[in-house]
Length: 161
Length: 161
DNA sequence: AATGAAATGGGATAGCT
DNA sequence: AGCTATCCCATTTCATT
Image 1 (tube, rainbow over the protein chains, first blue to last red):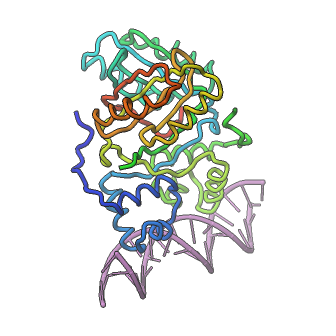
Image 2 (cartoon, protein in one colour):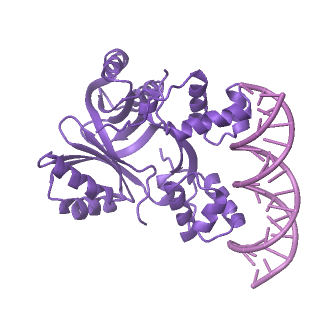
Image 3 (tube, rainbow over the protein chains, first blue to last red):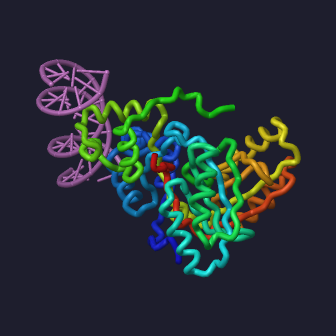
C-alpha cells in the first residue's frame, strides 16, 4: 500500500543544499556543484551516488509539450461506478495504456481519480473523451477542466525545511 | 499571453526517437543513446544540442517527495473574488513565493486556479490553508482534494504521434 | 546537407593521504 | 573530506556520401 518501501535515508544540511542546487539547475557540472555547496568533487560524487542510489533524486528529461505538438492540457475528475479494488485496478490499467494520460491520482472528495491529460488540441481531446473513455464501463462521471496557462511549475517539489 | 514564443522547430523521426528514449531513461550515455536510435555519437550530439538549445527538452532532477519528508500531496481548487488581471496577478505572485505550491494552473470551469501542493503531513497542510492562504484577501473559495496515491506519473508528457 | 570516424579536451570517479 | 591520477564520455574537426 505504501509507496515508501525505501528505508528512511537521513539527509544532512549538505545533502539538502545539493538537492536544492540541482533543482535550480540540473545541468550543473559536479565541479560547479561542489563549489556551490562548499565541497570538492570527490566527496560530492559519493554523496550524489548515495542520493541517486537511494532514489531520493533521479535524473529526468522534461519535454516542452507545445514543442512536440501538444497544445492542450486538461484535468479530468473521474468518478467510478464502484470504488471496489477490482474496479479501480481495471480503470488504472486502462488509463496506464493511454499515453495522453500523463498523471493519475487517487483522491479523496467528490470524485475518485484526478487525471492530467496532454493532447494536441480540443478536437483531440474530444476524441479521447468520446472514443476512448466512453469505452470504459466503470466510469460513472467525468468532469473536464481545461488548462489555460501554468504560471508556476516547480519540478521538483521542495519546501523550505 | 502565449507561452510559445519559440519558433516551431521541426522534428523528424529520429528526433522523436531520441526524445522517447530519453524519457524512458534520462541517464543514458550519448553513446548508448546513439546506438539506440541508429546513429553515431557525433550527429547525435548535434541533435541533442539543437533540442536542448531550442527548449524542446531540458534536463531536470526529480525529488522523491516522501524521501525528503513530504508525505502529503493535495490539489486545491481556488476561486478568486474577481478574475481581473490585477487580482489574478497578485494571487500568482503570492503563491509563487510559497514553496509548498508546486504547480499553479489557470483553468476553465467552476474555479479559477488549480494548485498542486506538497507538504509534510495533514497538520502542515492545515497550517498552510489556515495561516498562509487565509492571508490572501482575493480568495473567495478553496476546495481541497487530498491525494491518496499516484498510480501513474509519466514525466514527461509524450503521446504516440 | 547530414553522417561517420578519429582525436582532443573535460569531467567524473576511485585510491590514497 | 581533500588531493591526485586515471578513465570514460562528450564534443569538435575533418573527410565522405
